[in-house]
Image (cartoon, rainbow, N blue to C red; front, top):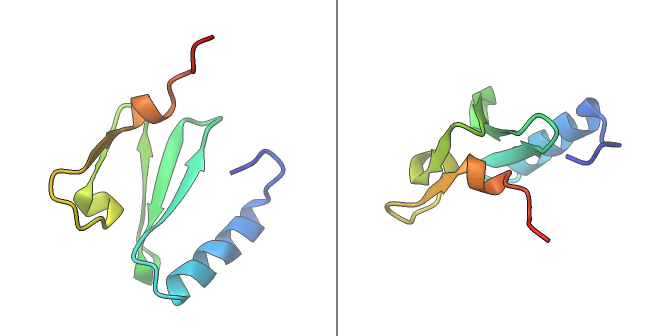
Length: 78
């Protein structure tokens, strides 16, 4: 999400993607250092920088996929 994104607009986009056949929609909130994974049927789970997303969370058909969210939110060096 960008700082200017409104929650209502983001919720509408999530619904559009899921209605269009997406298996998962990730909403990344850099300020909060969270990723919310939305699934069809209204199921959603929020993960923090302490968590690791896996193939199952991400709906990737790649066995063993892991994304430590601390890496995603790590500050880039100079």
